[in-house]
Amino acid sequence: MEALESSNQDKKFVQEFLAEQHFMVLAVTLDDGSPWAVPVRIARWQGNEFEWDSKLDTLHSQALTDRPAISVVIFNTEQQAGVYMSGHGVLVEDRGSELGHYRFTAERAWLNDETFVKREVTLL
Image (cartoon, rainbow, N blue to C red; front, side, top):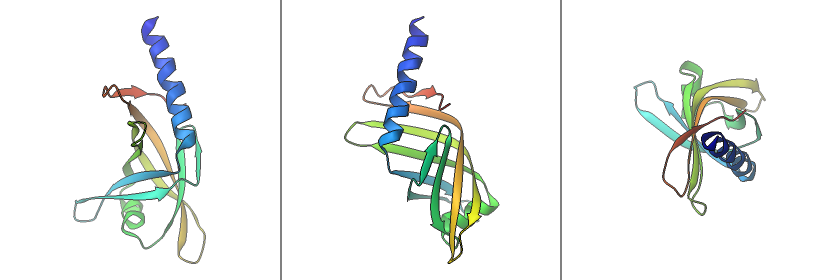
């Protein structure tokens, strides 16, 4: 019973935490195998899906086309909290003027807070 209560508290914390955030860091793999991380503004978030806009010719946008498996981190240094996710990203819409609208779908997620104990959480 205690584990379920803790899990529900974590889920509530994550939902409230994510609702307050405006940026996330995408981590992709470039053509040469090297990692690349970049902050993007969250355009929309619902459940385990996060959307953003980026220019089509950026390194992360180009990498995402060939290698959709990515990681995302959303953190707040004042709260000492972060949500770490792995999943896949996709170009949803080419908005013209060299701009694309993208979606990340988290397949797994973890919470790390002031307790410094990383634990898996559900976003749905």
